[in-house]
Length: 134
Image 1 (cartoon, rainbow, N blue to C red):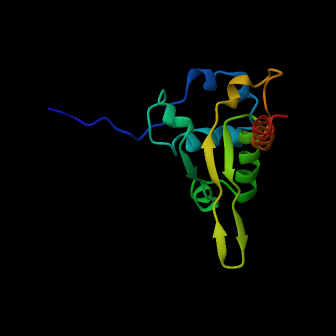
Image 2 (cartoon, one colour):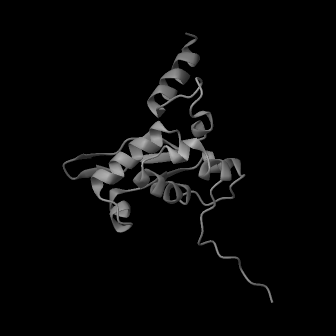
């Protein structure tokens, strides 16, 4: 008999789970890591893992038990620790609402090293300067 394997789990690398970067996260931000990782549906070793973009709305976070302020602080911590990057920052103007778009990041691997770039905005500025030849 051919059984399908369940896809109802999220795999975290041991390097993340037992690393200093994960243990330095505030508890609420650490609780968000598997939810952000679970947004990308591919194998852990797949290069697609860090290329795919996705939305994670405040409505989803509320459903998962996070208040708006906790979710906001969690996102800031995940960005500053190198777990995610913001591709587009959402906004709300009258009736028009845009959700933020995120991408998983590998910046966490350099956390604690001088080469670590703390925020996605710094990373964006660095790549723009490289392209401009500065």
